[in-house]
Length: 226
Ligand SMILES: [Zn+2]
Image 1 (cartoon, rainbow, N blue to C red):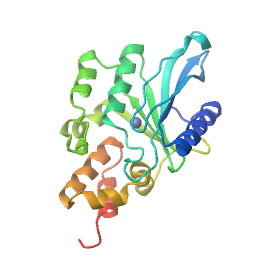
Image 2: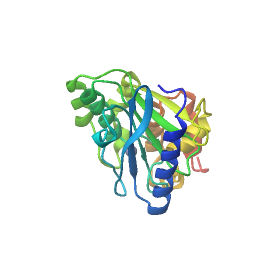
Image 3: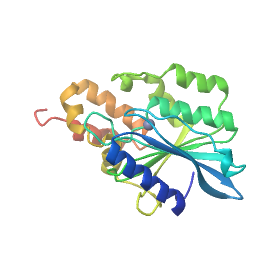
Image 4: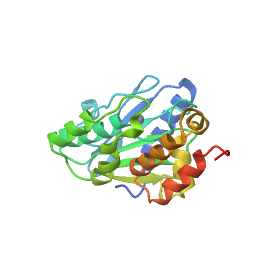
């Protein structure tokens, strides 16, 4: 995992953030390495809810794919910077294709942190397929036992300061504000207590954080009547 996001990449991330804050659409960049230097070698815009994954554009010269960064829009119906199941499947798939561990980061202008997930190893194709097969593409994604059990085995997660690019050790509250973005009120309104507790355990696994995040999450999502 990176110790810090290099200034040139951070600058390009801030440009993606601005694009997404203005358009409400996702956008992505791919960072590649040549002579031990990371540079942006491809960028694109997505739609409201997803974005494609790009290779190193060969017009920038021969380079090795190392990481990608994409944005999630900040709005009440989107779950903040919580990595989607498709995001993780793509990270593994790119690691397999490029035969080197990939780092995938998620950002937007409003979040207190940038979150990055790194594949712990180059996966087998069978492992990539398992992640693809277990994707739940609905509001019930948090019921995935597969992800609760496996994400920590396959990914390292790290958090970065979006102004300086430094790797940070965030508080539980900062992690949750990053993961949920503007959706806390919507989640409270649309889910039963039992569902919210399940969601909290899921977020704990997907964010690669310590157990205390689950309890903080339950507090944050409780409607004061409980
Ligand atoms: Zn995503």
